[in-house]
Image (cartoon, rainbow over all chains, first blue to last red; front, side, top):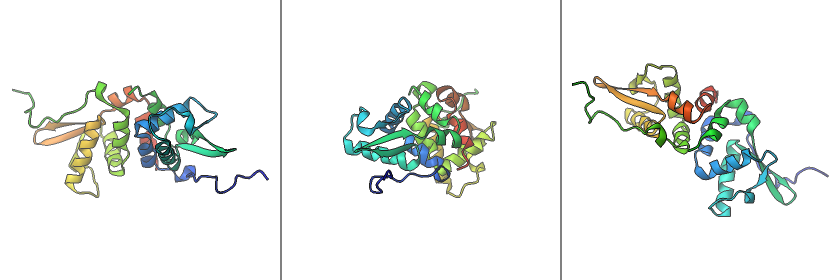
Length: 107
Length: 107
């Protein structure tokens, strides 16, 4: 049996369900932008604990959820961890240039 | 005397004062996106009353203010009107691709 137990799988919007307002809202936060920048540097994905953030673990979980529910990141169970990756393909297909413009921002 | 009366001039952030979080927040709203899309089609600028929106005039004024204070639009008095334009040069310089990605969004 190789399927993911349903209680560990998290819901994600499909590409057709993503909305620009939700994506922009998800990106419009300094903590979430820090997470997105870290994920952009780690295409293999990272666990949320691997991002060094000045907020509590539950706050990180909250921010990861907003990013996931907007379609910005994908979070999947791997063993006992959850590994997140940036949904660059979906973002670039729907909003070409947006992610690169955000990542290029110095401030 | 050709200077703009100070009580009609509105404050705008300079390019160096603009912040990506504020720009993304300003764009992350359906009414404000409608305004931005209308301004993108009207490089000569438009008065806020010229955008057909299903909200009150005071609500439009509120949304225009958020866009202006983030640096997304410039609003200047022209006679007895206020004409707004998209700050495309500033946005493209700071966040190349972002505005085009947002304008390309079908949803």
